[in-house]
Length: 454
Image (cartoon, rainbow, N blue to C red):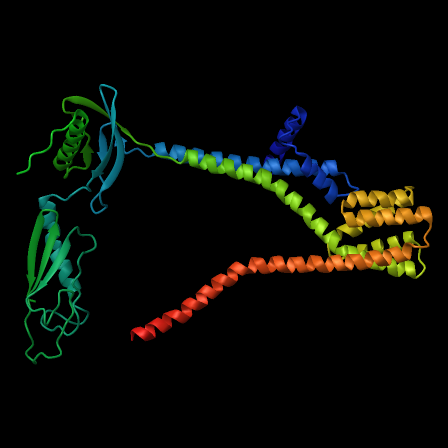
């Protein structure tokens, strides 16, 4: 990832020098200042953009690599050899399907799907394999411990034999005793038993052998294109039948007197892979901004939830005789310890602690409270900062009363906010509840209908 991070750093430097406004929006910079008050937000924003760009570059490079592999793999496998031959599948491998293009002298091309059968055995080879298959079949028919003179259990009558190309069809002279699948029905037989002849019919294309164990429509007129297509099909079928016993299938070099050049039809997914990679990269770029803004919204929600607690503690400490500044410092330092122990994020307590640091560094108390309200950006805290500043200017005679009123108002608002969240949660649960009700109705109705039917 260091390489991608280095590339992202270089791209960021280029974009920053060219001042591309579409890449650097104002919202992420604003969100970063809100999330990291008092810190070097510009460095944080730079690291954020470099990381985001490096992830986008990583996705694009991976997409290009997969596209390249897919492209070269499509051309690495050659079906047509020397522009003339196609190698058949060997015995038992099934037919071969190839997408090819026939190019004619006039420049026109025809796409053709070739279906080339597997290489077949010759008549001599089939006779030899047939004799071997009979010997192998005699070993497999009878269950272990039995033979043709004494059969007591089910027979094994296979439809194919491993290593042999034949399909085998079975017939029985007495299906009441031996079925076509080898099942034995010997419950009612006498002690002498019953002789049954089993016929095994071996088939392989036109080849057929049986071994017994004792046991005029005229075609329509064709257009030039249709005539060419028909001639192409007939020529392909003719070459297929001629070379069916050969290892290679020879492509016709001329169709209806016209010379034909063959080329493979290559298929790849380069475009799709690049499209997916591009969409993923764009989504990553803009979703990072969304995640950043979501953190800001979570910060605001947490700060709003903490407001009643902070006002109540101010009322408690100021009512006990502490100054506003000392009460503020005590709240900030107490909750700093909780945050260090991993208790909560504590955004508001970070802001309060930062305000304490400002006052220690020489910033006037009233100005520090005003800065606190502006950094929070929430109406409740702006109002609280204004209240503290006004009482510093006019005296603290009514501060405690005003803080108590603010605490009561904040408590009511917090209850209303909790009630609203409960209503939203109930709305989200409505659809799952409806689905669950439907499933329950189905489970009830199916047995009921089954009872009525019986």
